[in-house]
Amino acid sequence: WLTVVLAATVAALAVLALGWARSGVRPTSPEIPRLLVETFDDLSGTEASRAIASGLRQEVVSQLSKFKDIVVVESAAKGEDPSISPARFVLAGSVNLSTNAFRLRVRLLNRADNSVLWAESYDGGLKVAQLMEVQTDIARNVSSSLAQAYGVIFQADANLHVVNPPDDWAAYSCTLSFYAYRVGVDAESRSSVRACLEKAVDRFPTYATAWGLLSLIYIDDYRFEFSADPAESAAALDRALAAARRSVGLDPVNVRGRQAEMVALYFHKEIDAALKVGKQTLTINPNDTEFMGEYGERLAVSGNWHDGCQLIAEARQKNPGQGYYDVDLALCSYFSGDYPQAAMWINKSPFPSNPIYHLLAAAVFGEGGYKIAADREVAWLNQNQPDLVKNMRQVVSARLARPQDVELFLGSLRKAGLGVADD
Image 1 (cartoon, rainbow, N blue to C red):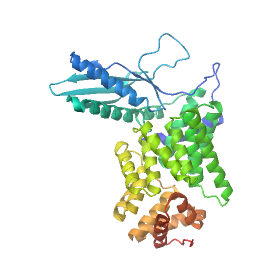
Image 2 (tube, rainbow, N blue to C red; image 1 turned 30 degrees about the horizontal axis):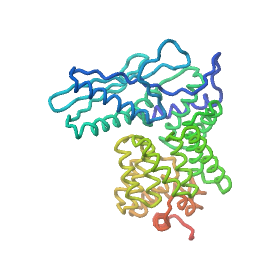
Image 3 (spheres, helix red, strand yellow; image 1 turned 90 degrees about the vertical axis):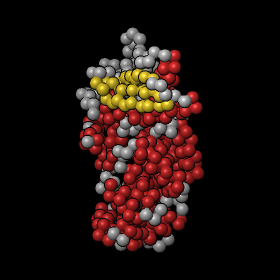
Image 4 (tube, rainbow, N blue to C red; image 1 turned 180 degrees about the vertical axis):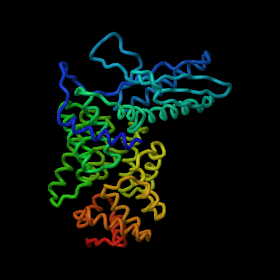
């Protein structure tokens, strides 16, 4: 169902990009969801239970605050100050103690109608040596479930229809549309999202997240469109790096901006610098599975297949709904020599219009001896991406850092039936 919702989100972008709502009071900043974390109820009424309830809430606030796409507040805004948007979401919870364990029950409420958007229970032991670690693990789980890309808050807002949205909401909708586009990664949606994000940063030039996502769109222009003019491709990459640095300059700990900087540096062949940014960013927010998967991919294709593929697998385990993890795991299985498993991951991946998906599928099926499937992929590439087929060595070399990995992959494409030019 999420794919349908996100497709509708992208379809609405043309309206936002062509004309943004005008009202008497123009907002000065983009809409960012505000989440009120209430004091967790202490159901046991003991000194120990009060301490655990307070500690859990503090740790949840700390972990949630690492996500820059939401604003976390600990108390409701006083009065009617129009400059302070009210929290649209409320996180409530309760703690109960038994002899040797505690249970935390938490729920996310939509403040507009008090509907419960999400609820979960967590158990933990009371041994002093384990208590802090258990609290941190629970808080990370809660924060990832709610605040990550494609998490509960994102899904709630992706489902929300705003008639004649004000500029702040329109700008925020552009960031939602980016994640909608990433479900399928097709060129038509990319064009709409690019226009929307460019409008967003023009209207709100200090919107760091929008600059980061715009950079990632420019990166996709570079890596998924195969221009016959090298200068055009280089210009797209330069735009991506400039937008990423604008994002990081506005907010040095913005994970989307740092993600874009990492990927742009990688394709700029500044691989050590890219991986340094990635390592630093993972420490800023280790709960962000969107970044974890991207950093894992950069590590893997740079040659560190073991550590990179472990991160990708962890990201998928924590956020299993995203198909691009399956593509990355297909690549991991391919380079580990497990071609049946690589074929399994490819067949699970929902990217029928992405040319790199078809290139990887051709290599997997060619190397694995799946002739019918390989012939199908070769036919698709020849019909739909003739420029890619003409420049396969250049395309593969831009993605894989080690020469031996490039040659292995090109050899598999030859087995699939594609003509690969010699170096």
